[in-house]
Amino acid sequence: MLLDRVKPLDAILATAEKKGLHRTLGAFQLTLFGIGCVIGTGIFVLTAAGAQKAGPGLMLAFAIAGAICIVAALCYAEIAAMIPVAGSAYTYTYASMGELLAWTVGWALVLEYAVAASAVSVGWSGYFTGTILGHTFGIDLPTWLTSAPLALGGKPGGFINLPAVLIATLVTWLLMIGTTESARVNAVLVAIKVSALTAFIFLTLPSPEFDVAKFNPFLPAGVFGGFGTGVGAVGAAATIFFAYVGFDAVSTAAEETKNPQRNVPIGLIGSLLFCTVFYILVAAGAIGTIGGQPIMGPNGVPFPAGSEELARQCALPEYANALVCSNEALAHVLRQIGWSSVGNMLGYAAGFALPSVILILMFGQTRIFFVMARDGLLPERLSAVHPKWKTPHIMTAITGGVVALGAAFFPVGRLADWANAGTLYAFMMVAICVMILRRRAPDAERSFRTPALWLIGPLTVAGTIFLFFNLDAMSIMVFSGWAVIGIIVYFVYGRGASHLGRGLVEVHEPEVEDLEPPIPGTH
Image 1 (cartoon, helix red, strand yellow):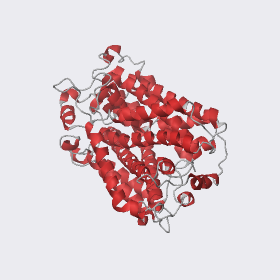
Image 2: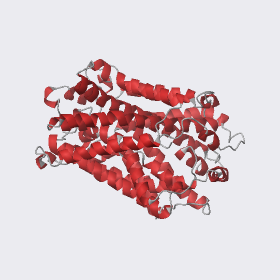
Image 3: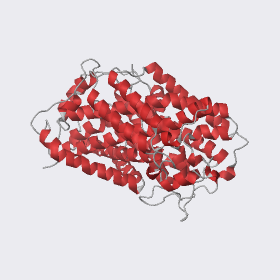
Image 4: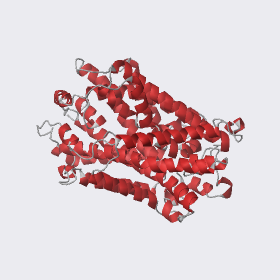
């Protein structure tokens, strides 16, 4: 039987009970925590890609993605409160649906975290080369050093995105030696991000340049462009779903929340609604001032974001200042409407804040790898801990190499779509896990129970599947190919080496918590 290896829930819960975290968070603190976790990367780096897919319909795309995030977050909150141990969706699936499906989830999370870190590295590179080097110091690096090759969706003359490689390498080194930002630094970075976006809204919406005519046509590619096309408002929602990733951190805080049954839904829904409105206002400000219509192909359909065809169009003089062609969209908008100095400050904000996001994503990747290796599904050598730094240095180095490679040769929109494919699969499996455990372990302690699970659970599954198939065909193929490789690795190595398959029931929470650095932004 392929689904017979289920890790005993009792062993996992027994480990979780030893943590005994103090419940201190109220609804307001949880909402603020959620806003801080969610706002950042996607809105800074994916506005251009989203506008190319949907035009002004990007505003509707944020609403669609936010609604699906809300139902997914409510499912995530129950299982995170019930099984608050390392491994995230991988561990949840292991305890409910068995080893094979848990492996597929862990493998998908590898794609999610590593490729997302690559996407943020590329996004950071756009602000670094544009604002910090170009507009501040007057240094213009050659295109071949700052862009992916044209054939992979970069720019004409592009070869490698060197700044993206360097920031990924720097963060890898920091993680290997055990350095992480403190909670105080994390709070400052959150404040910088939110302040920058608030300033953007207040400078664009009342601007004399703002013209409602620029929203017409509102849906140049329609609401639904068709499965596998990646265009239209739903196609854009599948891409800018990336802008909401981070809400799962709020879900995992359920175990530290006072009156979680009341406060967790308030915190989750409140923070996601706030972020959705915030994002829509940012999109409205950008589109209303300089326009956000996509560049159309000869068939009347937008050129694919991150494609060679779009890159060629963006190299033409008539599209040089288009929103959809900018590598630093929000700073670019402010410069276009006469706020160059504020635009530069927004670029600095992104330059300072985005590396911490790369760190958190790579941190999550290494911890998933660590738990999978300690379960025997990956070579245990990978989970070796450095004697001096106390970090899983081997897997951190491997992760950093993969992140740097992706950042070097692919555009941000394409990377974000690939990461979203893994994320959507993992969230779908979490919703299924919650419904299974309600039946299989009805008496297990749950400090938070998803309300109306009979509705919220299926909505989450349907919503994540719907967004998945609204990614472009290449992203679906990349995920499918990655999944096939993962299944081959499992049957060639993991199934035979699995500790559970050999009768060893282990939960590695204490070992994970002994690693350095601790969870970024919490110390």
